Length: 175
Image: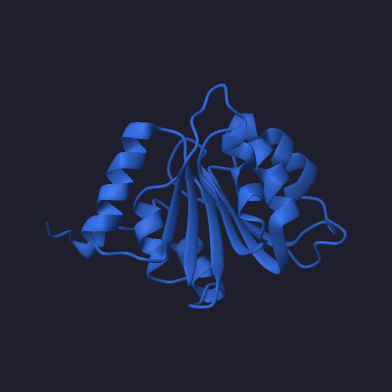
């Protein structure tokens, strides 16, 4: 089965995608909560993508894309939710830290708590749809308070207040 390249891009607005592409390279190791089109796109830019998916049907579909496109630099983990918190804690099983982390799945506030412990110094965290009400605690407690993070940019995107926030982590010791 052939897959058109154009469909395999994350639903990020162009300015957020550009910021990511400026930071990422073939040596970057990446973690993402929530898999899909972004997983395929990211695999073409970074060294390795570790993606965590909670929905079994979607997990199977993404696995099919990975196999069909002969992608070898993606590790897709299935962790059901609810009620299992292994979805949030799955990155700890990998026993590593990451240059880039994308949060675009379930329980994003809790995932951010894990992400801030696993991001490398000068790393990049991408928090999709940051302006939604349920993410207020993360937005107010972390993304807008220097010196914890530096150069946070929220890109207004789709109508309805959705946005993508790109956070450049400068010093994880103070984070």
